[in-house]
Amino acid sequence: MVDEMNSDARLEQSWLEELRLGDEAAFRQVYRVYRPRLYTFLCRLSGRADVAEDLLQEVWLRLASNPPQPRPGLPLGPWLFRVARNLFVSYLRNRNRDPGRTGELTALEIQPAPTPGPQEALFELETSGVLEKALKRLSLSEREALLLVAGSRLSSAEVAEVLEIRPETLRKRLSRARAHLAEWMRRPE
Amino acid sequence: MKFNREQSEETELDHLLAELPLLDLPEDAAGRQEAAALACLARRRRRRRRPPALARAGEMVARFGEWLLVLLLGGGYLLSAICRALTVYGVPGVP
Image 1: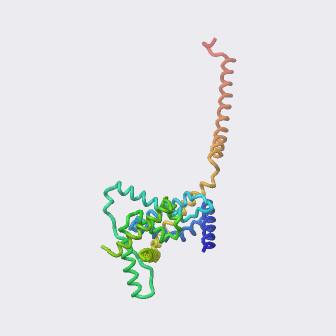
Image 2: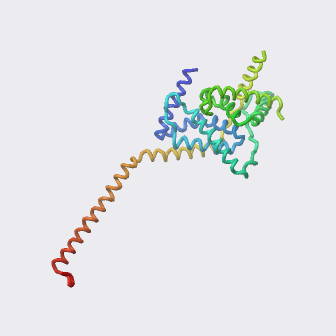
Image 3: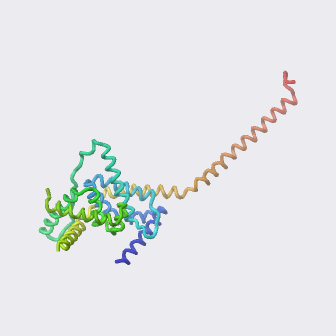
């Protein structure tokens, strides 16, 4: 497991070095690996597919125009998620300045992954539906912490780095978020 | 006991969260985004290939300086020739 993480980190370092030289193949690798994870994160964070798409485009443009310096121990994943998260925070600030756009929240339609049988599919659809709704009711800080820990494949230390908080604060925030999530799931409305 | 129950609930929640389906962009949007980013990368590559700003500035000064020097020397020569002619042949009214 540790070896696998080290080899992933080494691979990412080499992609970064090649990216800084403008290598298209390295960019395509990063794009292929991180696109679904970043898009899922942004979709669930914003609750809107169109916003997630726009923000994701901006993340790729930033990576292409100014990739981070490759440094050992500083992998690419946290950098990408931090950019995505900061872009979403900026988007929220701008939207709040523009009152005409505050009411245009629409529900995100989620396509579940194919499952073995119809009963399991129904159960999973119901569970994930309840979970998605409960996630949307969490505060932004709790939602982003949970989404990063559960869906981004980053370590707790990396998530704390993305959110620019101490690991201890992250642990407390996660505990609060899980308690709220469990409560919202027990009482869906 | 209560702690164990809470912990198992947390584990179950984490499991459910991890099991949530991964979403992805529609194929055409994904292609568009990749193309835009690659174009940006190509611009960056072209910028990298250009010589540094100081070298480019030096090159420009050398190119335009050459013309300026020719103009000044040529103009100065012509002017001195005219002045010499005026002195030699004299101009009415000039002592």
